[in-house]
Image (cartoon, rainbow, N blue to C red; front, side, top):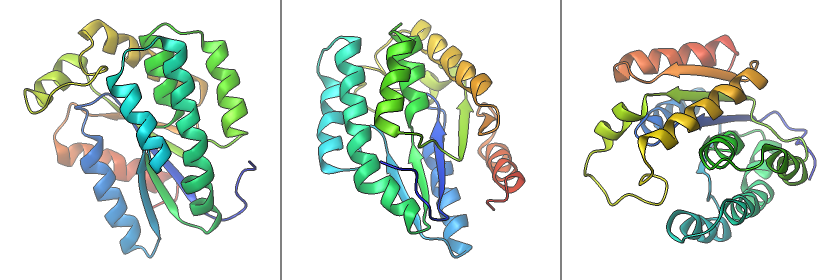
Length: 209
């Protein structure tokens, strides 16, 4: 699986549930479409029929951290092969709700799983493919929980205690330190318009919008 040779752009949106990623994915998609780009919106785990099946298992069935990580990377392999790489090859803008940074944040830091194993899986599955830009919507876990409220039945991850999400945030911060060129931290505690302005600035500064 080689890195695409086209002129596509791969943008990932990261952060815990309640951070407000979805509304800004939609805004970004509209802006890129208005600029004449083909836009592919997708998510992880998921994005293909197989990956969506694996997503359901990961979110709902009890399992240990290794099993969880293997299923997520299996879903990612199919997602890359079937959706992401073909779209980038033809020059599309791929907007993905979560990617590998989530795996390091949730499974690596949240679950305390071996980061070296995750690094090997990342290399084997992605073979060098990384996002061009990662927007990290950073929001305190307590504030995210208030935003979500009782709107839905929580999955296995949403049911975790606040301390879990504090570890997840440390995981995102560590990935940003490792990959400062592609990461843009978005203060998701602000108003939706202020957050949108940060997103626009991050993308404009990189020549995307």
